[in-house]
Length: 117
Length: 113
Image (cartoon, rainbow over all chains, first blue to last red; front, top):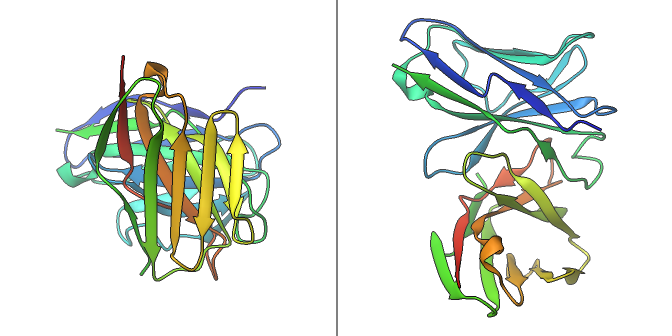
């Protein structure tokens, strides 16, 4: 059973370009979470999605960032017009249930390390 | 907003000793607390979950305690080994309105042979 998959593992973008990060949850998991980890900082929640729905985007910057989880295919985190401050590790996690209603661990992917030059 | 503090950014201990890591939190009432391990360049890996009505949980050489009055969790690794060297993260979840986990910044543990 493959774990959570993320690609690319490393992404280099110049300022002003777009970054697209992909996440395929574990088989059977319909809940996807995106986190950002800056150097020497903890994981910060960005957005929580279920298939075709954004459930909670309270941690996502209002501008330039968007996320989707289509009926078919991986979840996508999209960052438009990247700036140097977007450089970070972005992690995707999945779970089979909603964390508000059930206590359950999250399964994390290996992360995408974004570098903006 | 909720605040989660993990004691000491880094902790060095001798192989064979017990490592104790602390997680304190404020402004939040979690329904459960989790501990994760993160190795450099990798995603966090789940270790243990403890619910608010549980005092202690064990798994092999790992032990977690949860005191909701003190708002604190202790994470113990007994008979530590160099392979236990990693960053350990505590995460809170299940509080009112929360769809996600709130993570501490982690404690980097080094077990010296």
